[in-house]
Structure formats: structure tokens, C-alpha cells
Length: 384
Image (cartoon, rainbow, N blue to C red; front, side, top):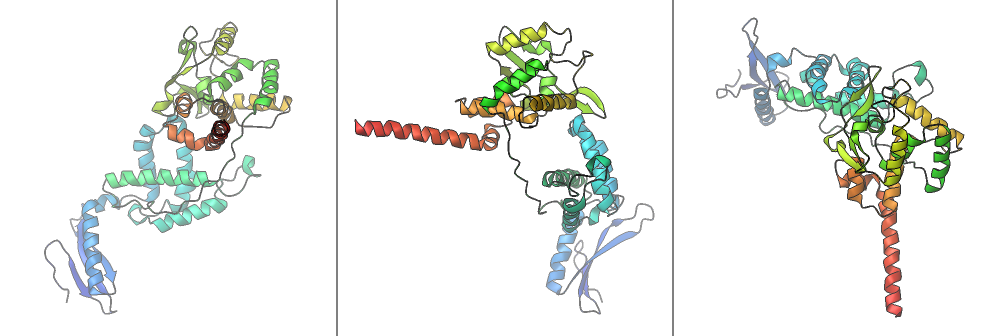
């Protein structure tokens, strides 16, 4: 016979197979009004009591009836439409949708939301790392597995959706907590060394894109920020640029978009040579954009990257990403004595600590030079 417990604690009994079972009410079916029972199992009475207590506490945090209405795939769709679309930049919507449709729903989409476990996620991440790439003609020559960064991004998307599910009382804990995530591969930073800058700028001038790449090297703006500059953002007398928007490709369209973070909205000072180059650029265009497309509208970010690669090839220089132009600005500035906080502000980073971590190799070199300088000074003082 079942052993009755105090009201709200459920009851426990010893089963014929020797295990102990704890039973509790999880709510009532809204259609039939019937009580919904759930149970826990344990080898000992003591363990069963503990499991039952924990289950009842967790059940109190969850709307069991609503939770059982969703699979993981259904909840990811609900989260994307009602939460992600509001909080995430429009330029990221397509990426998030791709994660959900191509990777999350095919593998774990049919699992009931309340049943999703850390082990389910761990198996998903292992699969994505080995064979997660979507089969496309343009990806045939690429590795079959997704990168560690992409898998970590997918985990973050799932985690955000699960946090929202907790807020809505659909689950009691986030199954992504404690998942073992792949370590990020160290991607070596590439820059244009000072001795290569002359060749690069010479070829950029011959290719008709000198002004744009000069301003990039002088400011370290992100690609979208550079393309989003309008003449109303430029104070030629004061020598400043206001970074207020970016250009991005969203759903196939090249459009203006908000900046990456609140720190991205900033004022960047420029020297007189950059001011003069902008004055020359202003005389070449009637567009509101500083660096417009041939039609006067914004340039596609892809076109600017292709243009960069053509200039590098013609100059006989190694191929780099557009973002490496930004790295070049920061590296040269730090190597020439500009303090880390100033560089961080110009780059629009959220903290000087992030900038310090990103360019640790540069600052370490500067510290060695400082140490050697002090050693020479002190040695001279001792000899005197």
C-alpha cells in the first residue's frame, strides 16, 4: 500500500521490483479536468524522498500543461519570432534562422521541450563538429564539419531560447548549462606590415580606390561602418568622423543597419592628411555616401572585399581579410605609442580589456621594448 505523505509532498511506495516510486500531481488537464500524475524512481526510500521533493519543487516552477505543448523545434520557432527578432540585429536574423532550420530542428527538433537534456545537446554538438555542414555546391571543397566557433554560436542560440523558456515557466533549468563546448581555434591575425603599406596604397591609387582604403587604415573602422559613412557625419574643420550606422546585406539587399553595439556609436579623430583626402573624395562624388557605389547608393560589403583582394594581388601582397585592415590600424597605433584605451575607443570596443586581450602580442612586444629601454637607462646610471 502506498505510504501517504503530508499534503503537497506526494506519496511513495515500494514496488514489486524492489525499487521505490514517488508519485505526485503535476496539474490538471484543461480539457478533461483529470489530474495529471508524474513519478520518480530510486533504489532506496531515502533517495526516493529526495527525488520526489526535488521533482515537486521543480514542478512548482513549471507550467506543465503548457510545457507539453511544445517540441524543441516548435519552441525555437516561437522564440525566434517573438524574442530573437526583437533583440538581435536584423543582419543576424538570417544566420539565426539558418542555425535553427539547418542544424537544430533536423537533429533535436522533435524532442519534447521538457525532455531536452544536456546529453542530447552534447550529441548534437559532436555530430555538427564531424559532419554538420549543409551540402551545397559551393561548399563541396570545404570540411564536412562545422567550426568550433559556429558550434559555440549554435549553443548560444539554444541557450537563449531555453532561458526564455524558463522565464515562461516551461522548463525549470537550462540544459545548455554544463555542456562541454569545443575550444575555439586560434586564428592567426594578419596585418599589412609598414614596409608593405606603400605598395598597397600605390596599387589602390592606380585602381581608383585609394581614398577608401586610406581612410580605413587611418581609422580602423569596421567594413560596414566605413561604407555607411555619409558626408553629414564628417566634420572636415574639426577633423572628426561620427560613426552612426553600417551597411549590411540583409535578405539579399544592401541596406543601412544599426551598429554592432552601443560602443560602436563613437567619434573618431582624423589627421590633416586624412582630412585632405576626404576633401578630394568629396569633389569626386555627389552622393550622400562618402564611398558610394557607381549608382550613388551604398556599396555592397562583398564588392569591397573582392576589390581589396584584387588590389593585393596586383601589388604582389599576401591575401588578407578586410577586417585585417582594422587589425593593421590597431597594431601600428599600439606599436607607435598610442595608449590602449585610446585605441579601444577608436575601434569601438566594449572595453579596453577586450582590446588588450586581442592585441596582447603587440603590447607584450612593447613591454619588452620598455624593459630594455629602462635597462639601458639604469645601466647608464650605474656606470656614471
